[in-house]
Image (cartoon, rainbow, N blue to C red):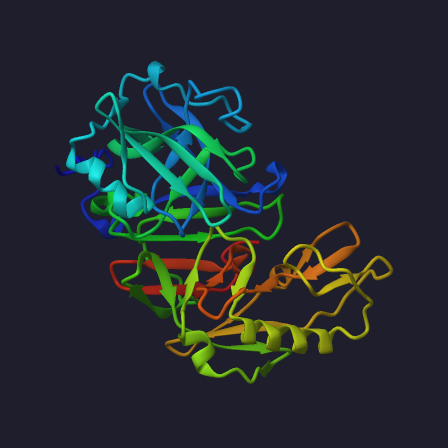
Amino acid sequence: MHLRLAFNSGKTSLQDSQVTLPAQSGSSLGTGNYFVTVGIGTPKRDLSLSFDTGSDLTWTQCLPCVSVKSCYQQQQPKFDPSQSTSYSNISCNSTLCSQLNSATGNTPGCSASTCLYAIQYGDKSFSIGFFAQEKLTLTSTDVFNTFLFGCGENNQGLFRGVAGLLGLGRDKLSIVSQTAQKYGKFFSYCLPSMPSSTGHLTFGNNGVPSTVKFTPLSINTQNPSFYFIDLKAISVGGRQLSISPSVFSTTGTIIDSGTVITRLPPAAYSALRTAFRQGMTNYPMTKAVSILDTCYDLSNYTTVNIPNIGFFFGGNLNVDIDSSGILIAATSTQFCLAFAGNNDTSDVGIFGNFQQKTLEVVYDVAGGRLGFGSVGCA
């Protein structure tokens, strides 16, 4: 079955098709992720969804929830499919139902001939519900009449106030693939550094700023949905750390807008932590907070000089981490180095969203490259 996409804009080429959505920090909702607002259903219901390059299936909480406790609290009213004239469930014997295997990592279920999905994330959050088709509205001229998504009736975890999740991965069920005929598998975003600022999530390519430089994307056959990039080295305070290249290449690194704190191989994190602590000897250390083990009491300081941190990627690309992406506030006076070590050398590295703040991050999926530009937003 081919997806039918609605082209209402009158534009004639992929190069001209572009839509930009405001991207907001989820900190006011108690989450470290970022969200955009899209319209679902007929009549259109505006729903705020966290956007996640580390997963594929888009879903939202739906009524009726399985039980009183099976849906988490969200700011907007939950989506009621019975009130939408464009909603339809996908049947169990549809070839579309079988696509959930790759998109969720789980075999789809069946309830009265209706296809069921189940997806679990790295932090044990999960969503279970009906696999369905619905009208997705990004703007009045960017409408997709047969968008495949999950209508979740059992959802738990760290979603905190948003209505669900927008999947930006590589799988054929991701929004990137489902809108490929219009936007050419090209999207970009900038994550704002402060809750009061606004960034963007943009689909389509109307030209790339000259400040954006690219590194190759690679595909990992064991995890084909993820965006793997070649992290080669790290610098602290302008000095490159002495880390063997094999430390990074053993398991590889993905970029993930849905993970907050960057995770590094144990040896790489140890070197980063040591160098950072050496550059922060003027400030008193305090106790660790969860996975963050390099924390400081800055209650007596109005200004703090922190060592800058740079990441070096394949293609001779150097990315300087914005100062807002180096220390994270654990309390009003306690600030921690916003990086963590993986538990094992076999764990994949993750370039998280806290380190991506203010950068223009460009995903040229069809072209097999990822770009970074400075100051894409404040």
